[in-house]
Image (tube, rainbow, N blue to C red; front, top):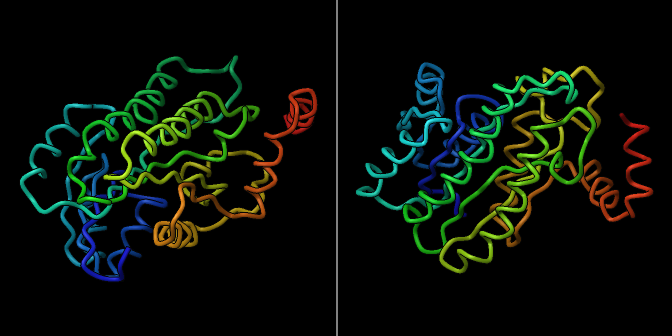
Amino acid sequence: MTAVAQRVWIIGASAGIGAALARALAARGAELVLSARDAVALAALADDCGGATIAPLDLGQPDQLAAHCDRLRSEAPFDAIICTAALYDPGRIADLDPARAEAMVRVNLLGTLDVARLCPPLLREGGQLVLFGSVAGYLGLPGGQPYSATKAAINNLAESLAVELAPRVDVRLVCPGFVATRLTAKNRFPMPAIVTPEQAAEAVLRGMARRGFEIHFPRRFTWPLKLLRLLPHAVSLRLMRRIG
């Protein structure tokens, strides 16, 4: 990605990493389209970003994404489309709220599938489709379902898209560790190697500027998890039980 003249659509831009990415890209001279459910927060963020275009939508309502894609198809193509949108509710499986679980699957997984289906035609040749999975999708973490399950599916989806859409679309997978957002504020346990949304945004932009597929950070946390998932289940599950 170049330092100026970028055109980027961020879906899930109203808070957290999405908002930090918007501010960082605006500071680099990018032309932005910002989407999220919270139109008021989007409008305030657009002012911070020098008058970015806002396109409020809820990924849980697929017709809304389709309508925006139809409208944006007549405009200049995007250099990158970034989807950070997600819902998160930690808890044990016995305490699961079925309606909330369904909403997480609808937004996190099916919403990302809609982005993967509808958005690539809006990208320029070689443009980037950036999907947010998670290190929570590397292996089953205690108390992480169904969020971890949706993120594991996104990790897998991005891998398949990287092959299916190449070379016209440059698919990138972002797998953050713990980032201090309103979502992780729900956690009631110590979060190792936690970073700020601004640090996360800079890590994402550095990764997008380099060749490669997966952008994961902070490395001091993500590499041990990558190694853990390479262990036999007899070992890795025993370790996870201790964590749980």
